[in-house]
Image (cartoon, rainbow, N blue to C red; front, side, top):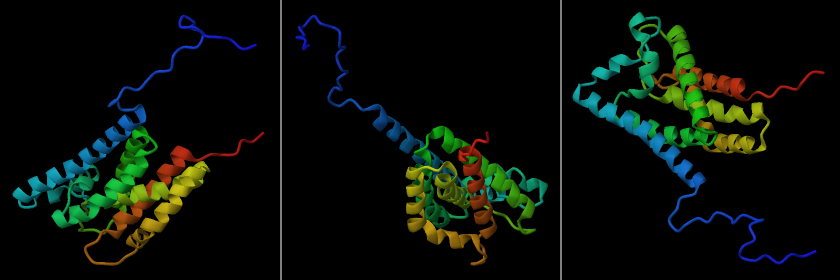
Length: 212
């Protein structure tokens, strides 16, 4: 039987209205994540400005394999760069791949970033060539790449498999960076960062088949 609703009938609560100029929660969260990522990139640029006026002094805070003085570099190295050209070449991959990782939420982004920095950095400290100093966010960027390529496989998610496929098309050429090549480029950092990203995806999103 149909029912006639009058102005005093409250059986169906009114839908919330969005006032002109009001930002939706999804849009607000997206904006916060973009600002968060830009803030991290801005910090790197700020450190490089300081490094410029200190005549490269911050370059000493890199990862120095099997050197006790190089241990703190595991944490600091991803945020220090050799020069502005080095930083510029890393900024766009960091922003793009970092943003895609952020689609899973800031908690996942922080977990992946910390895991890659600590695991990949410590592995580089253990296995990197003696007498070298590794700086730059490439280890972290390759960690994001490995994570994004592997997440869809481990999670068995169509959406993230599509992201992985897109990343492979757009950034597949970066995979050559894990191979020995140009002198002065830390391919070891690229490789270990990439492997750490894959491991992070496995730990966070591996779906196992239950055994009965």
